[in-house]
Image (cartoon, rainbow, N blue to C red):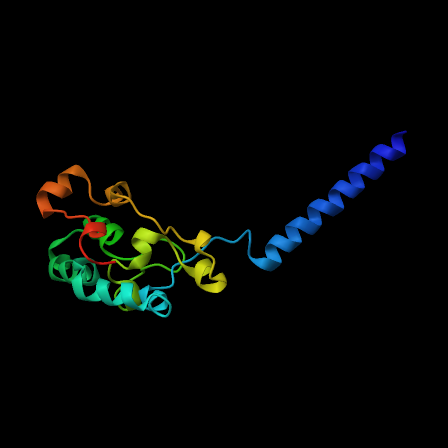
Length: 158
């Protein structure tokens, strides 16, 4: 009887090792990284065109650049969190010089990091349907009043 317990445990370990190896091999265990809106444009041309033409988010870094010299480093970091793409996250904004493709609020600010979606094409790897609640990460009550916030989901960007 003790040997059957060891055999079951050995089989269990082999199965777990196989699953872990498969996840690592196929990227299942890795998290998505930010890739930039131009990558999204390759398949979502109309949405990207509308975003660049009609959305203030497509030019959100302009205000940061104008105000940067008047802000303390901590204040500037707060700006980056809401006015750039993926600040402080894998593949996201680092600086205007190092990651210019992430300097504005891109598609991934609302839809999430897109690397897995782009690699696989699976819509499950990206947030497709947005609600106004998704906007509240950056658009807090104070900011709504201060900046006359209008949700992009109603603003013609899509």
